[in-house]
Image (tube, rainbow, N blue to C red; front, side, top):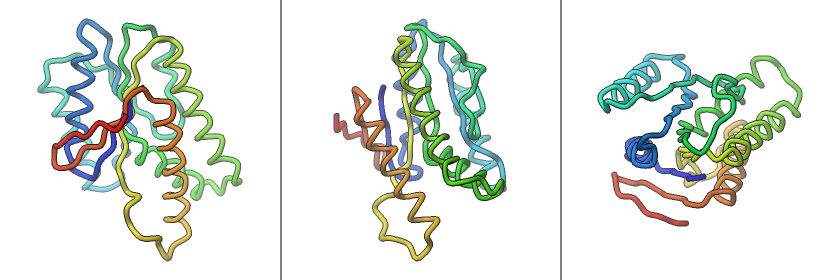
Length: 180
């Protein structure tokens, strides 16, 4: 597993896609997209990411995932590269669903455990997994409990992913720093 993080518009997605293409020569490429077009900014961002992939002349198998792990991918082998874009958006989706549906507090833990289990399953099947996330943990604590919960969960998830990754990168200003 490979973890790639960085600030918003830092170049991390472009780096992740390029890395996936390099790893995916003659392999099946999956793009797990977690974005939900709930406002104009997000719609534009999704369209930009789709257009970026279309110009690469690569056959990405795009699977949309809001909260639930996609069944469309199924059994993978060592000829697959899965690009999961991105953890921060996925976790936002989980928290939004949790609030909207008035789920019990175990819901969030179950979603996180399900994602972790799926990432490890794909890895055990021999697929190369690239996980992208945003670095949002540098800010001061918020006055809002929801924001602090999000930061806590994201920090714990980042630590778990890095612990289970073979490589970890941080991208800032299109400059790539390998940490692991």
